[in-house]
Amino acid sequence: GNWGILDIQSALRWVQREISAFGGDRGRVAIHGQSSGGSLVELQYVAPGSAGLFLGAISESGGLSAMELSAALKASSSLAASLGCARSSGHTANKSCLASLSAQKLTGTTYSYSWGPVSDGTTFPLPPDELLARGRVNNATVVLGLQTNDSNLFYFRSRTRDNLPQPNDRPDGGLKPMTPEEYALTVLRLVGPGHTAAALRLYPADRDDHLMNVHLVGNMQSDSMHCSARRRASQLNRAHPGRAFLYRFDYWYQSNAECTAVPNYHLPYLGAVHQDEVTFVLGQPNFMEAGSCCGVWGLNSSNCPRLPSCEACYAPGKFHHEGYRGYFNDKEWDFARTMGRFWTNVAASGDPNVRSRDGKDEAAWPRFSSGDVTGNI
Image (cartoon, rainbow, N blue to C red; front, side, top):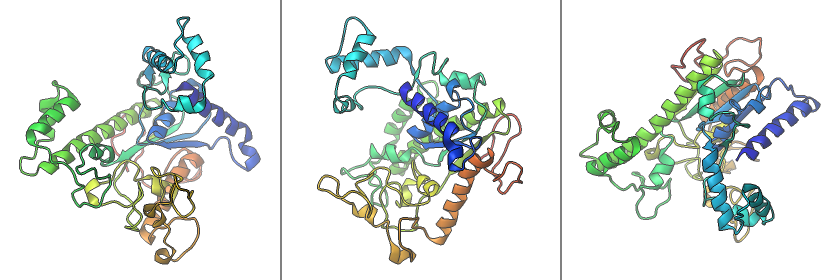
């Protein structure tokens, strides 16, 4: 919720106060996040309390939204009732009761109710998308982007047969075919009756290859996300010309086919999907879904065993080096360094193309001096 937003602002104020003690420059701070973290980053560029706290913001597969206050209060009341904390005297009494419960009891309800940042009139004076539309955004460079097939990872999990995981080792992904009739109904549910005909013209059903219809739905969802990111980038660029940048990531880790912990190696049927860029941003294979129960350096217990899909990512014999570092082939190591250069340039100069504020362009990420952002790297 908004306490999370305020926590981020508090951390950024700490950086402003203390970074010089670490040899840093308070004027060269960038924040970046992925997925829900990307959405939290985007909220900072419209939150008045974040003004002046960062030079750049990078959102990987994020978005910009917040709950209406009425919906948040309703969810809070339902949560309080489920935990025996409903009080007729109002929300303040509910809060006092909830605060007395154990953390485990509260966090056990995480996936039972809607939660997240709220348009409360204070942290966000207006809904975030309205603040952006009005140009009420903080003065910062913003980088937005996502993967070509971003939605496939999660959408395909709802269309997989035989209880297979996603990703898996089937060349077709083990996907359930979708008839043209089912496809038309799916499109109707996605876009509504007013836009169905136009969507079917842009994404016509495949009457011969019913697996392709599953991919078409994924394409439609991913393309919608790309269009939304471009709209937000254009609105940002109109508020602060030349400060909004857009990317499309069209690759995934391929150095080591045994390193299959998400988001590393997977078969081509998925395309470039949600999380695939993180390995290259961080400069090493990582384990976003398996977490600490993974890898040579992970935890190892009966309820948190090390996983072969992660341990295989440590391959000194294949890459001829030891230690906790990136296990890439030469091509992908260069690519990871390029991405790292772009991301850290945003902090160094406020421009992914430039290392120092008085330096010249060292890359060719499209920059738009006014108006809409109409291109990406």
